[in-house]
Image (cartoon, rainbow, N blue to C red; front, side, top):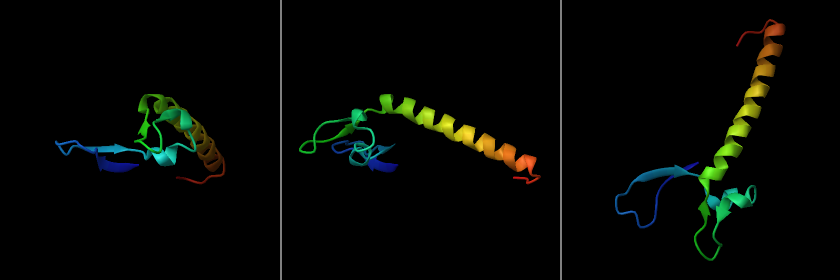
Length: 75
């Protein structure tokens, strides 16, 4: 995650996002444009992947919490 001001934005509005060049090797389907031009990220499509990852991590956390509780270890 990075904070940035979009090139040409005269308002100077600070935005938060990901770097397209770093995302491209992992999820090329979410990156548009070419290296010769500007790359952009399709955040709308990226949201579903992020939600799924959060769900999977939550399942792991719940399993670990259960193991801790079964062994008398508090958080």
